[in-house]
Image (cartoon, rainbow, N blue to C red; front, side, top):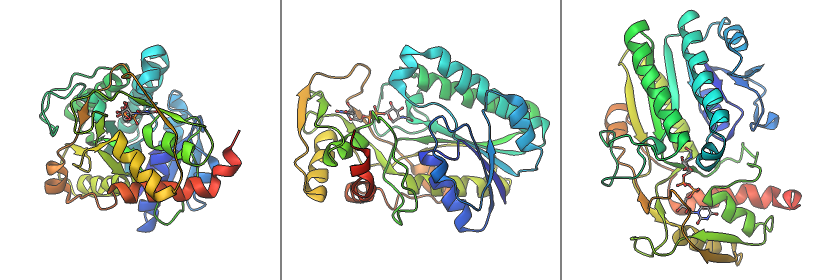
Length: 328
Ligand code: WQD
């Protein structure tokens, strides 16, 4: 299979590339390196340096003939999307429409979207399944839903086949340490905890201790990036086999609290990890946990690396190896 990964030099994209390369598929990466790292790009891939906001560059890449494209090039910071919505509409909506229309114009039949649990907004019931109402509470989540809705229209009107993978909280690193690029200035919990453990930042804030959860701190469904990456390979095979469009959650189905993550990190790293308990962060739900039954049933997907210790251990190895040269 010939698969082109838009945003393939990023955290998720690099792991997805590894899984396709592992089974001898022909892999391309299209990236503007705004956050992706050149060190992440495997020498076996065909590299296109470009921007999805430039449709001409997208068409040039697609003219080389690709069976499937994977869209991992959306901006993903929910908080930032509320401050800079134009950045998000230009890249996540206009850029994604460039990909969809260019795919149709160039005869690419199969499209896999990196989507997000953010499309659901505040959970009305748990675990969240794919029938849950989609009422995003941040602009980032809205852009992901807008892309999904356009895929549904273009599939009906122009026979584009697609799978939308709704990730819950992506975490962890390649167990074989083939991916060593660390996110710069992370805002997500696990990289923040790791930066404190590695001495890159002196301490961290825990947002809220009065949630209706077992220990009062926020609970999320952390899913290992290798499990997510394998979901993309299964989705590509699903489309290749002509099995039709699909929207699925990819989550571990296990909820872990902020305190549980911090305690696991203290035990595994042996570091003190200084925290300060403060008020809630605006827009945070108390708990968000997936039902991934449809992914199990239709794709045969399961989360094999997503235990808390596997997530923390695989992440700590990378920070411990690189942390010192990241200390400001
Ligand atoms: C997890 C928990 C925080 C940082 C976001 C996006 C979502 C998706 C994943 C792309 C919460 C707490 C965090 C910190 C803390 N992105 N926390 N101190 O908010 O669940 O999801 O990333 O698809 O769209 O919204 O992830 O890691 O930011 O927070 O206490 O310094 O950790 O309050 O309970 P979140 P997160």
